[in-house]
Length: 156
Image (cartoon, rainbow, N blue to C red; front, top):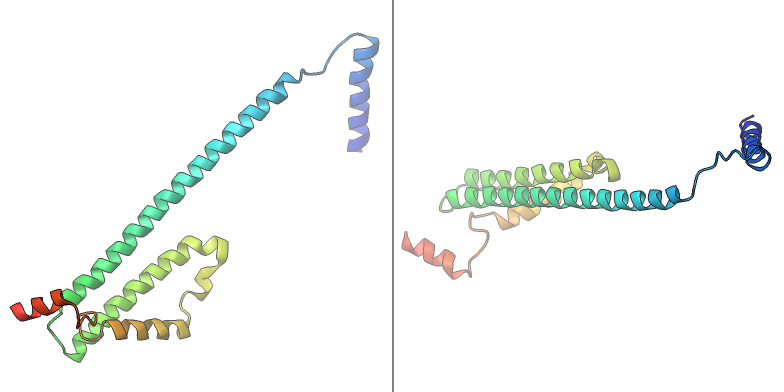
């Protein structure tokens, strides 16, 4: 039905232009202007998307830096305390800080990759916990060879 109606409409326009000298057509200048507008809008949209990406990247970088500082402050706060409770507290602070970052990253990538479904995989959590425990076992990030750490300990 649509095809027949479209054909009749086209026939009417051609008939009026050829037989009655009534021109209902449009000039082709509009197409060149339209292509210019479309290219401008595409470039503008790409610029907006890139700006949003860079802004999000900056915020994510700031969140990661803040989480790293939280863990560092927790370790510095309890650097000279060697009890098992303090060691577990440092480990928990680091572990849950990493989990907050994982949740943030999964939230950002959720729509495109469905990462939120596998955010808290038990096997992966155990490996993260093992890495954290190996680095933050005694409060000094295992820096026995670091002269700054040794000098700080000797000054107290």
